[in-house]
Length: 258
Image (cartoon, rainbow, N blue to C red):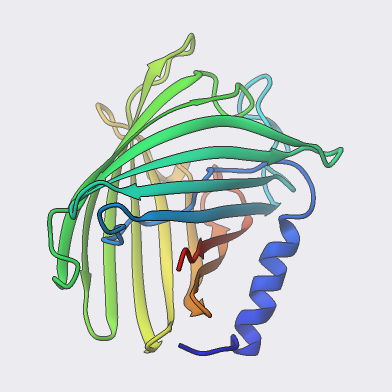
């Protein structure tokens, strides 16, 4: 493992973390393609998700919704390995408002199932998530997501696909079950440095998929690396549809426990 990040990575890390010290709230609480990473039984884990919308929508999606432009969200994700194939997780949706005050915007629980062995090149599984959020993030307070996970990890190439089914658990607003596809393609330049592309594509209601041109689609150029035991996923995303934020910075920081 390298002791210092290459200078381009260091610059992007500083830029992403600097965004976390400013402004308001942000888009999804996590921008991530799920793969086969799992805690060992009895092992704890902590990831810090942060994203900042550099340029986004000027009008809210509904009355009381948080505007996306210059919006920030910082979300700790705690995890615990139950068995070799089951992992529990919990999110605390942290936000910072325009007055630099910290708020907890909601909580979510998840359970992740990956039956394949950690060293299998082909992996598959599922993740179920249920959570409660404030109105600034969703018109309905209780929502869920079922995520299908499929991927491949080779010596150099990594490819993964998530099929995400989002559904309302409880709330006053009409919210049909919807589908999103998230993909990741990465190439390892060394043992601890990978470059790649992640894409997040909303497809609309499951029963009647909408016109793709009216849906949100965002593509990220990403770097995955490790520095002294800290795992880093850093990305710059651009929305390529009218419904997307134009530019978004994201970071996922894996905190070492040993």
